[in-house]
Image (cartoon, rainbow over all chains, first blue to last red):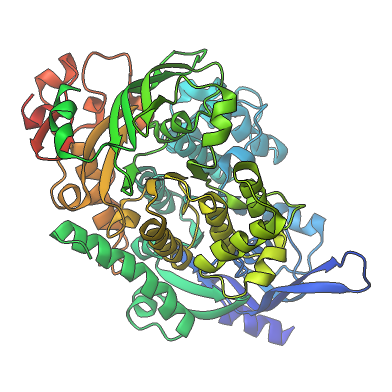
Amino acid sequence: MGTEQGAKRAIKPALVRTRALCKQYGQHRLFSRGKFTVNALVDVDLEIPFGGVTALVGESGSGKSTLALCLGMLEKPDRGEIWFEGSEISRWGARKLAPLRSKIQMVFQDSAGALNPSFTAAEIIEEPLEIQRRETGRRLRARACELMEEVGLSPEWAKRSPLALSGGQRQRLAIARAIALRPTFLILDESVSGLDLSTQAQILNLLLNLRATHSLTYLLISHDLSLVGQIADFVAVMHQGRIVEQGPRQQVFASPQHAHTRELLGSVRILESAFRAAQAGGRS
Amino acid sequence: MSMLSAIAPFRPPPLLRIRGLTVKYPCDRYSAPALQGIDLDIAPGEIVGILGESGSGKSTLALSILGLLPPNASVEGSIVFQNNEDLLQIDEPRWKTIRGAKIALIGQEPGLCLSPVMSVGDQIAEVLRAHRPGGRKLREVECEAILTDLRFSDVDRISKAYPHQLSGGELHRVAIAQALVCQPDLVIADEATRSLDVAVQAEILNVLGQMKRRFRSALIFITHDPTVLAGFADRVITMYAGHIVEDGPVSSVFRQPLHPYTEGLLQLVRAHRQPESPDPQRLLPVIRGSSTDVDRSTAGCVFEPRCCARTAICREESPKEVMPEPGHRVRCFNHGN
């Protein structure tokens, strides 16, 4: 007990912290015995401070999404600890987790796939409010419209199908659903990749505004380093299931320690210098 | 159109000549043209980047060139290929000799374009079997040659592999191999590097550039990110709400964009593509509004509602195309109309 309290005091500055988190996916081989396994997470120690934007970057297949699923309690880690608001939650059962689920919300990349097409826009936001019994009756629709306005969607669109909205508007709707239960921690799994640049910037600005009004903490997962450079406070770099580097953004960008981080930053800079050269005149 | 024909004598005969292309999809809400009066020439061996946000008509343009528009779309205008036939008039049997052989497509999701139950070598060979005479042995040789060209070091492993056994970057290169194996005259890459990480993106661009030099294929590269076009494309075309709003050599468009939309887009990139942003708390610059605000039935300029340089006339009339610099055309009242 004493050690646990000691640990609680130690983790105070971080909202979420993982310790030696491991996750392995196994798959049976066709026509042969045994399994082949993928080590999606290997001893992941991640710290997500209160109120900041922590970016998780890495190439595809590096384990970013698996980590997101574990933190969002949609996947059980094989080993290791997940601390959230001072309690270790990785071994909790469904019943114990239920009240916690409204505090951790996720926004996915493919908004068309994440929103039920047979619901209207307002019904999508109402569903979590109804399930968690936050609002009832007429208040329910009013709250949904309020949330739509908050994310920059016109309440007149309440009866539209999500498929009648543009990609950017759908992502706004997904964000409205995510903040409906007043969470403290939002996991954004490639939420803006695939949108065009202006829409991307609009969604990021919305997220920055919401962070201030709702005191949210973000985990932003992205493969786009230049985007991360714009809004993240902290950066963690993943490579082959491990976190190879983490720290304040300026520090990671200015003096990357790990070879993989340097490689990632290098390829971004090649594209950028070509772009700048083209703007300045000649072809590079 | 008259302007284009005036400069035609100075250019080699175009590989593709699009005139007055208008495409409408019957929509229940409003029947807005997805493309409106597109005039475009593509020279042999040219790399043309098409910039535009979702809904600007980039993909519809690609589908029209490939003859893959849905049957209920109404199409006007002409797309003349290799100076002799109008692609909008030919029938399906004729298409089979062109599509894949002379005009090829590299899709957005190569993982989905490839069959999961055939080895990738067989899938590349299938394209050859459809378009070329020659036996199995010859196809295997050609298949190996194209994979070597695409800088695969272990051609044997790749050609025997199934799509799920390859990484994202490898799949992309396989899709490119499939598109290039018949040495087409025109390749269309529709958002081919979207959702790839930067390292893979740079590699794919590199491969495409090399291929262009080798096979002299023209390439239409559709994207929403101007960064990838710098140092890669010869020409940039900006599309907005079904119109070509700007078209010019990459050097002059990037150095001095003429249309306010292109300018906004480039400013956005300049701001976003700075890894060392001094202050992460500030908001990012945006082009205000969204393309869904566009009222396409308006008499005025389509970009007027979002434009920062609009004047009274922009709401009244649609701007005509002008060419303030040779080879650089724009559709905006701010450049004389």
